[in-house]
Structure formats: C-alpha cells, structure tokens
Image (cartoon, rainbow, N blue to C red; front, side, top):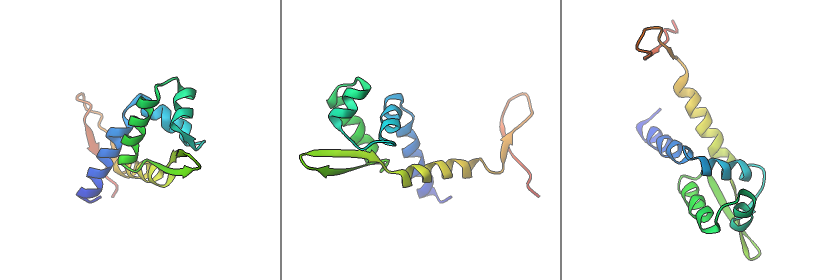
Length: 110
C-alpha cells in the first residue's frame, strides 16, 4: 500500500474510532436519514449529529443528497468496504508472535 493510501486509511480509522460516530454509521448503513431523524432515533442533539456527520463526510464515509427541503445522509458503502479490505490487507502475512513481549511478527509465507 502506498504512503498516500496509508495516510487516508489512518484518517478514516481515526474518524471511525469514536463510539457515537459508529452509532450514526450503524443507523445510516440501513437508512438514508436527515439530521433530525438521526438525532431523535439515537437520542442526540441535532447540532452534535450534524457535526459528527460533517466529520464522517470529511473522509468520505458518509454522503448527502437533497430530498425536498431535507438533506439526507447515508453511508458511502464503497468507501466503507474499501476501508475494511485495506485493514484486512494489512493483516495478511502477519501473526502474533509467541514471544513473551507479545510483539507482532511477519509470518513466513514461503
């Protein structure tokens, strides 16, 4: 993986490492919703949800589109799948070492 790809993956993982954002994503993976509906369903303030959605949009994990007078949000499943694949790719060829330090060591695939 190129350094630019790793940097983008790191940014996306940093954004994903937040409990409330994961709750929002879990809802939006199944439903396209406006801010108010997300806030009501998850018991959060609309301004807080809006801020979290902007953070998720900043790394392309969430997309928005206008539907009448509402801005609807949904998960960018293509990017979420890509993040998952990249994380798995990083794990291929690595295993937990059996030494006492518990360090990660490369697996010999030859």
